[in-house]
Image 1 (tube, rainbow, N blue to C red):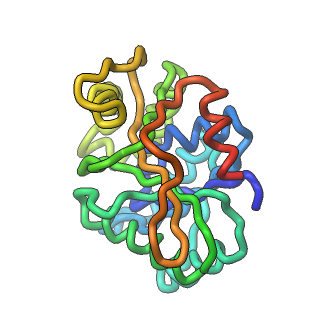
Image 2: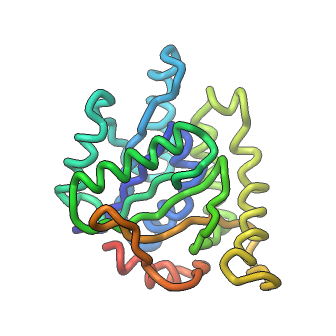
Length: 232
């Protein structure tokens, strides 16, 4: 299993919104990041444009987009996972507030269970918070700027809802929430301005298993390298 992470995105743009961990793994740990979109959106007339926008955003981030046959998505995803082409799967959590995000979670679970074996998983949140996150990843100004540049490639989506403009506020609030969700009630917030919350665990034998006890805050490159060692 090599240093590859597969990011299963419900839509084009999710790879940029929740892509901080993937970006840092690429830049600081030498991971190859593959992005598989579960859909190209519900509007048929926009799908070709959204594919192009995803390709542009991935180019900006240094990610590799992979387009699987939508008619056989679970089967093709399971085949990729069975071949152990990725050491880590990044996907939405089961209760994220958008129906496509929830469906993408169960797509990932079904593909992993069909593939068999042990999978490291990092779950993301956006439309509904994770109840029990265990990982807070800090973003530098450069990380935040890179994610916003990539998000701006999704011009059609930003025209109706400017996710790039609102990303700093969301990531700032993650620091507020993460301080107490990971550290306990009354814990001091880490001295970082922006971050993304995740949940890291293991999927094996059709069940979830803990990867580590408690919560972790990833600030430095050495913090990330220590965590990423399990995902190589």
